[in-house]
Structures are given as structure tokens and as C-alpha cells.
Length: 459
Ligand code: PMP
Image 1 (cartoon, rainbow, N blue to C red):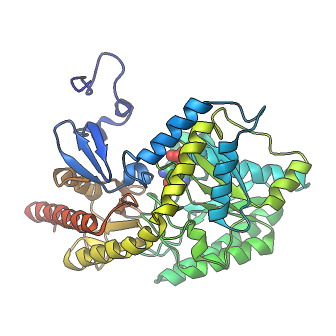
Image 2 (cartoon, rainbow, N blue to C red):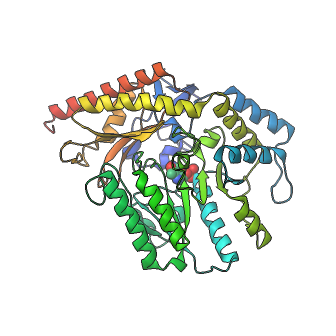
Image 3 (cartoon, rainbow, N blue to C red):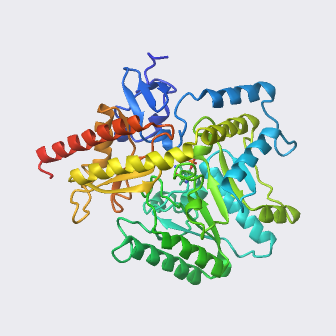
């Protein structure tokens, strides 16, 4: 297996053969993982700074989860949820609901993030339709934002460049400016930006007609699309007020933020802003199994079940092996207090990143909450000017990171119009010593990039 030619084999090959060749040159071939580390075929070790895809909360090789999945599979591999019930389904949803708290008694399982986003919106559509509100179809989201890669979720994702390719095929929802704390869309402060964005939501609902607007969906902490943007608290109370005023459902996409922010849901940081529906995925399966979930109140779900029901499913929804795996993931989270770890070690990591920012001419911002953090790069800290596209600073830093034992993930959002950054989201099992090691390596990586830029007379 090690000797397989993964570059351009005559047939088959790795998934990256489908991606742009420019972005896949020199990708390491990973052959092994252990805790927060992954190892390539040359024996190099990398800290998984991005937790796979902001998902591997438990790191690699968790025996309890793997064993739970194996044992479940040996006992009962699969039966279809449309024609039978099984206990692992009920056991998992009971755990999720208990962690999510009041208002989230019912949990609908699906096979990943995008699918759960679609299920949440379809659930709300079906609920409104069944209650006679048949015109409610419009969805409002933030620009920029990310809600998935299916044709429906591409339309809700806030990506200025998506319409050119997908426009005629995907139905694009309505967008309002994201309340970016570092680059506020209104005024000069994070609070100005958040107040302005909430006012833009209200104006958009009025423009579309409240009777036509089904939901406003947002990431309470941004993922890769904004580099862990945390809106000002005023945004949360304002959007709840606006949604209540106009009868619009509020949906939190917590596909990344659940388990990572220092509380089970990021929503729990804002008691005066309880969303109507919450979606989660990545941390729930922690990469051991593909799973997503959308949570709503028993009141809504049971009411809809009495009317038409929500009669959509996919083959792998709530399959027993996945349910057993995700339940074991949550048991690990609770027994090892990994959510508390995210809160405590997130503060330590953020302080280290702030230190890097203070000493670096190109780190313009450090933001995020818990172990969902990001470092934004700029050519000039005063003006917040981004590096030019040909430099693609965040990706060059990713490449230098590989030489320094870091697996980073870069984003230059919409050609740099919203900035560029590395997201720093290590597995929640990370220790204090490993945080220091990660921060030291990142500091060296950024310093090496600065040296390159000084030599090239860019800085
Ligand atoms: N929403 C957010 C906030 C995400 O970060 C992602 C995945 N990056 C998705 C939705 C889509 O999830 P998936 O890739 O599992 O379909």
C-alpha cells in the first residue's frame, strides 16, 4: 500500500486528484495517527491544528469509540428507520438532547453537515406549510458564511463568487453583511458592525415581506468562512428580538462550534438568544463516523407529527453503528470534561496567539472562543491591507507549517476581500504542553514567512 503511486496513477487515485493541481502539490500522504498527531509516509509528524476538518475532537485512535462501533456492528449492523426502531438511536438522541437543554428535546439524525442543514430548513418549511404559512420559503444568511456544499446549501452559503458557476442551478438565498469583528461592515467597532448587521436583517425581512421569510440562519461562531468570527453580544439579542417580532425562525449552524466553544452549544453563551433550531455535525461523530443532527423542541416536532409529519430520510440516517459511535464520543466528552478543557485550554492558546500577534508585523487579529480560534494575516496592521493574491500568504504559511510539523488550513475569503487566516482548532484532548509546542511552531512558521517577505521586499 505504501508504494502506491498517489500522484497520477493509471486508475483510481486519492480524492485530491479531483481538486485544482495548483492546490495539491506536495500534499503529504498520511499513514498513521496518534492522539493529536498525524504521521506521513516519510516519518514526519504533524500536530493536527485543524482537527481533520474542525471535527476530530478526540484525536486519532480512540479505543472506546472504535470498540463501541465494532460491538454495535456485531450485535446489530443495520435496520431501516422507516420500518423499525432501535435503541442506539434513542440512546444517542437522549444524550444530545440532555446536553443541549430545554427547547431541544427532539434530535433528528442525518449523515453530515450539509444534509443536516437541509433537514433543518426542510423541517421548518414543512412545519410552516402544515400550519398554513405556505408562502414562507425565503432564507436569510450572512455574507460571508458557510452552510454546506450541496446545491441547496450552496445557495444559503455566503460566498460572493459562487453564483457565477452555480447561479442558474442553485437557488440563492438572501444575504446580509456578517458582523465581522475585525472588519465591521458598519461603523468602526465590533458593536457598530453587529448593530448594523442586525438592522440589515430587519430591513431585509421588511423588504421581502415577513410572510415570505422562513428563517434566518447563522453560525454563532464562524468557521472557516470568517475565521472564527465571534459577533458582538448585541447581535444575538438583536437577532432574537427581530426574528420574534416578524415570526421568522432563528437557526444556529453549530456544525463546527458545538463542543468547541467551551460549552456544548455556542448558543449556551447567550441565554437571551435561544435559537429555534440548532444543527451540529462535526464534533458529534468526531470523524469516527459521518453524522449530523438537527435539534428542535418536542412541541414543534410533536405538533408536526400530528399534522403531516416530517417524512424525509436518507438511507444512513440514524444507523446503529453511527449512533453507537457518536454516543461513545459524547460519553468521552462528558467523562473527560473535554468541553471544560476547550474553555480552559482555549484561553491559554488564545493568550499564546495574542503574544504572537504582539510580536509579529503580519498578525492583525486573533479571535474565537474556546478551541475554535483563528489568526488573521495582513500586510499592514494599521490599514488591515491584505497580502496580494499572488503571494497567498495564508497558504504559503500552511506550506511552511508542514515543514514545522503543523497541519494548518488556510482561507483567503472571496479573493481576500474579507481577509485571510489560519483557523486554529486542535483536538479537544490537547494538553497544556502540546499547546505550547503548537504555539511555538506557529510562531516559527509565521516568522519564517515574514523573513521570506522581507527578502522579497514585500514587507
Ligand atoms: N456548516 C458549517 C458551519 C460548516 O463548517 C460545514 C463544513 N465545513 C458545513 C456546514 C457542511 O458540513 P459537511 O461538510 O459535513 O457537509
